[in-house]
Length: 137
Figure 1 (cartoon, helix red, strand yellow):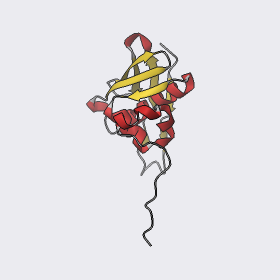
Figure 2 (tube, rainbow, N blue to C red):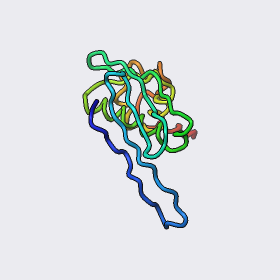
Figure 3 (cartoon, rainbow, N blue to C red):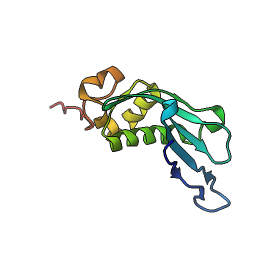
Figure 4 (spheres, rainbow, N blue to C red):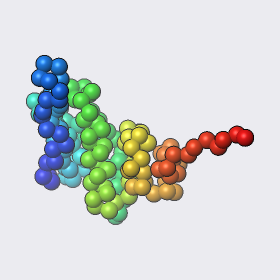
């Protein structure tokens, strides 16, 4: 298993009286289980993104966030971790997981990881630049 990566540390935002704690999310690659894993300090459960690697391509097939971890940003942190790992390792991404595909649609800085010829299959735009409506004279 690779070294854990902490995506956010437990800290207070704003004043102590008004702000909730930001959870400490720790993510790791668990290659022996073909998945990335995320845990939140003090909360039971492991969130996962399952993958298959084939050469220079990684297929992300399924994201699972157990109920105790929902609503804490764990799924987004895990998707970001998986995509950052793909970028770091030079792999193209095939986001078969609807959650990961939706994450890429919201964070177009990851669109370049998905081969152009595969983007339509995952309902992703052709390019990361927004298309502006044409003005009618």
